[in-house]
Image 1: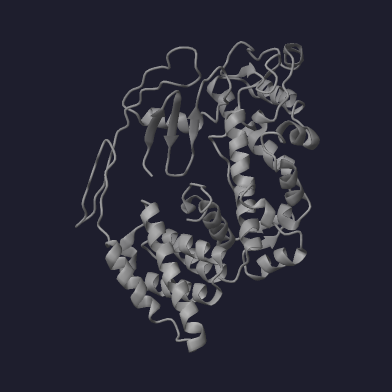
Image 2 (image 1 turned 60 degrees about the vertical axis):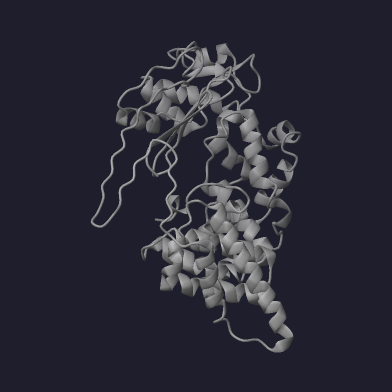
Length: 410
């Protein structure tokens, strides 16, 4: 993904190919800064920019991004200032023909099972075509590739045998993701393995992998206000929470299928939330508290300190987490001693587990269940393998999560 600017109202969003995101917003100080580093890099690459107008935080940037391309032999260069749709792949009719040709290679079943198999193959064909139609980044030309056709046949065979709704959904998502990779790489080989393994999992394992992936491997830069934070939690909890098993056997099975290892590092659900979203889980501190600990911190600089999101009568640091706070302090020339002292005051204001549940239960009804599912099952110690990440990512994608798998596997 090339550097791009998407201005939507008061927000400035900068995307980079390593998924190092920046997000700036200013709506009565109800949002947090998500870091300086990638915004600085994007600004340095821009031809010019205007400082923000009005009293909002990091909003209203006018960025002109230079577009450079390198084109190899026999390649076509296309550059556009807006949306450009290019179709160098196959038509749906051509895809359908290949899918049916590959399906004809599925082993013949006895007459009593043939009708069921044919129905499932037709159902899977529909799933594949629908997913390719929905995902604009899917590459239909992959159907010309022998390795892709082999993988498609394997997926068809697996779904013909099981007919399981969740298996069909996962396989279709993995096939679409695999179509985006044209070379023989760790990513393509991992997706090949994931297709084989996914057919042997139940809905419990799919849910556990997605839940573990989302909370241990991702951080949502758009969750920078109480409203967007609650929305993110509901989206990452509700689709999976009822299917997460309390049985040790489910997690032993994930290990047996090479999706995860039971690691030595264990993190509580509260710690995961605090590490990634501490600025949204702070009760705030008084002006006296922060002044006593670090008098050098300029409390009237809104880039550093803002009214607490959960109690505007108090203050908090204007950072989503400690990593962002380090970047903010580096940008605004805050010395290390003051930075550390200020963060220590901030840490003392973080909510404990009971406070988090009490504060969020109205807006995030399943928050207590999420704490229970994480802290009282082996999920808290799971270390996902590349195959586990691929399947967890795929299952999360089918519920609306958006980010390229290449962020985690490359």
